[in-house]
Image 1 (tube, rainbow, N blue to C red):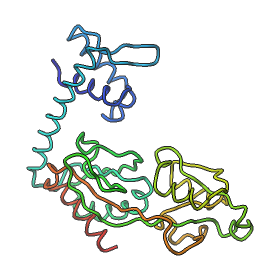
Image 2 (image 1 turned 30 degrees about the vertical axis):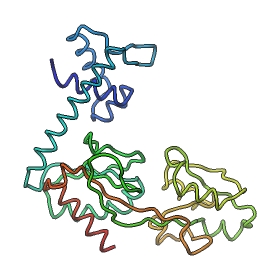
Image 3 (image 1 turned 135 degrees about the vertical axis):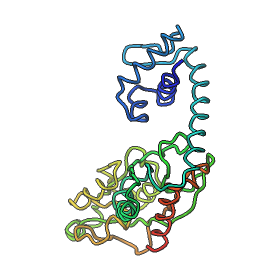
Image 4 (image 1 turned 120 degrees about the vertical axis):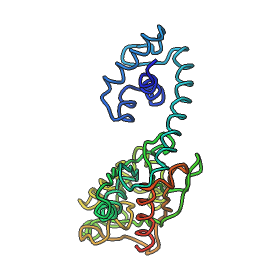
Length: 282
């Protein structure tokens, strides 16, 4: 039996779709489908029930998926052990972070690190969802809360303050009683800053929504209303001004996490220390 066939099947079972598995594995969805078909042929079992456009695990598929995930976890543990034993600062390190924080804060911190270690390959992923460190979706994760699940080592590296922002022209021309607010959508709809914005807006309109902080900032700068933005995103901009109280609307903690098995791997430790030192000095 080919382990790769099981690995692709396990990724499909976990993601719930061919496209999701393909994204997780970094391949084409046709490759995932071909691997699953090969596994079914080897086992002489139907693992996936094709119902129109939907793909659903059969009863046998669910049992084998559970076993395959256990095998995949063992494989990942072996990989973590091997990588942790390396002493050279080279290879690839993947960092997952909220998109705006990745673009406006982490990018400038990682460039000098890459210059110091030219054999290091850095992948910076701006992701709204939480990448799994246990499944090696990322090596280091930046999160806006303290991780409380999994075998992770985490440390707080700072805070992220949010204030209300709008364009200067909007504040100058629109009466306060007529202000509109720009809210969050998608996975951000349940965020602490969205709850604080809704409270600040009270009964006033939330006519615009976005799942991207960068887009919310663009909408505010274009005169679309008032948005709750992290201060680092508005700093130094002439098209956005702070509105209301000087105290933050809400403050989020910034945490950095790594799988405990990987914390001593030389490439990951180099990135971890660089981000920690940068955060301490900022």
